[in-house]
Length: 216
Image 1 (tube, helix red, strand yellow):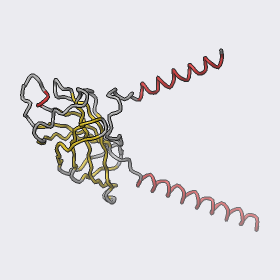
Image 2 (cartoon, one colour):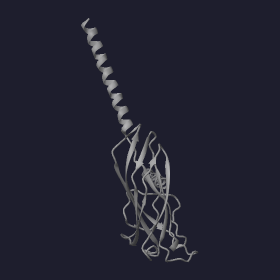
Image 3 (cartoon, one colour):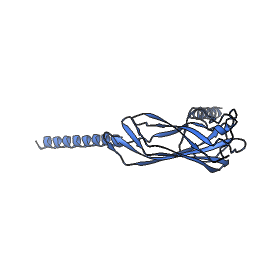
Image 4 (cartoon, one colour):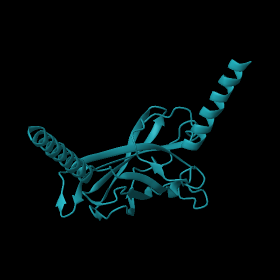
């Protein structure tokens, strides 16, 4: 009889521990959030558009894309502050302009496209380094996440990227949206960074060469 009671007690304890573990896992998954991603989707500098012949135009036009990767959490953004700087050497920049996008709410797994414009300093938009025009674009904001009907505390978000501007059209050189992440404000070579697929291909080729050399 004592052995049966002991087994029953162990079973209850195991069931309790399992239930508590699953509950803790569910709560952790419910509270876990993925930070949104911010991209510079487009930028246009009329002063660099040679067909317009308006070198003194100091307006900048831009489009941001913000992506909420969370399946079951909305995001409430405070105002998004943008700063635009122009490179005057490979590792130094000068302030160009600032802009602000009003705060907004973003639903689950939604994308938001935010258009805006700002005015830069006179005759600064066309500054070049080795014949090429580079801008530094940074953003910062605070966001809180909506879980069911509750909001979390605000988290600070920020990031930036270096952007090469075509000095004939006034548009960015690379058509794909540029992630405003954690890249440094330094122009390394002027050569575009390898994309993920190309990096994987390069790693595969290098591995193959090493194996070939080992076998021979």
